[in-house]
Image (cartoon, rainbow, N blue to C red; front, side, top):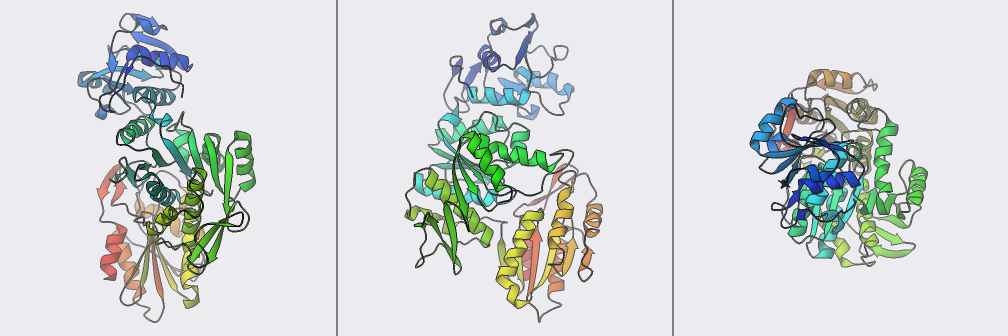
Length: 522
């Protein structure tokens, strides 16, 4: 982002102000200001604007407080403008003018999302320039990897590492609050970056979704280290990405905006990703189980990491052992170590052992009953993550010929390819499918379940549709106990640690998969 200087009063995040004229200059210098609209006429020169001060940049009229600049984006209802002015809106940014609906000045731009990011950065004093920022993308593993990186950097920095993840926000290094989006809107991200800096943070770890680039939530950000974990089919729908190519392209945007890159060399399209990094000038550190800069080697239930033959984390005598289950979480941990090395941590640093203590609720959460029924609660919600979860079950329990029950639904209104992807990944690998609700939103949960049931091709597997979700988990536990002579493994996937179910746009309270399963398993 370009710093224009002047016109802003910089104090704490909640006390900062930016003059409307300076806001217009920022947009003009960025080449996206079309004109300014006032009650006196239309102009290009910001000096025609009245002397007004902006105290916040918002995109939702429910967030307006006196001094707010409203960014008009998405499916905006014009009827909201007059009440917004009455609530304290002093100006608006939009891709069209609304002078017939409000007397507030308007900054008319070619791209409202870009404008929001530019102005939030200016208002909050460009916090993105002061923080060391790590951005993480991939089809699966972003949240777990974010927690792993955060744990290591917290050790390295003495607790001065913030985090934006899909399940938690941490702005002061120690307090975790629920998150709303995987990657926040730019106005929220930059405000929270300023809050993190004001709280003494020096580093920020954040998940970067494909939608973050599609919807310009990270416009103008350059990451000190970008992490590319993997790629698979996901988020293909009319309201997300029309094709896999579009989804993959948005994922790759992280590489173009990173100074350094940590790349899983075992992922699909590795050659293309390496080429992207080379052309972007990003210094790349590859992680692999076979051929990379940082090699992960299995050592019993643990692992070691070697950089061109030199031990950097764990040893044959004392391998790294995670509390997180799954070989893929070892891969995520290797990426976290690579981030630490890229930021200057020495090989063999005891601070890297912080990885071993990380647990992430709703991610590979394993429960075992007194009678030996095993349950996993996991956020797996697409083909890649479901396949990885089943690989782990086979690795751990394969010799016992387990009977596997899969409890799953899929979201409504988006990512419709997940429905087939989940079932395709499980076909021939599970003994029983129980389909249920999972954020059906404005679709019918039973219809989604029937669609998923139609993708089952394994004639030996049983299928059921059970509503609501807690009853589906209860049915799975009951079914498992009908086979006391077998090792029964129940996989409850899709929601992770979420404690709600989205129905008709509203989050309906739900006690959570782990709570339900723990109660039923005793």
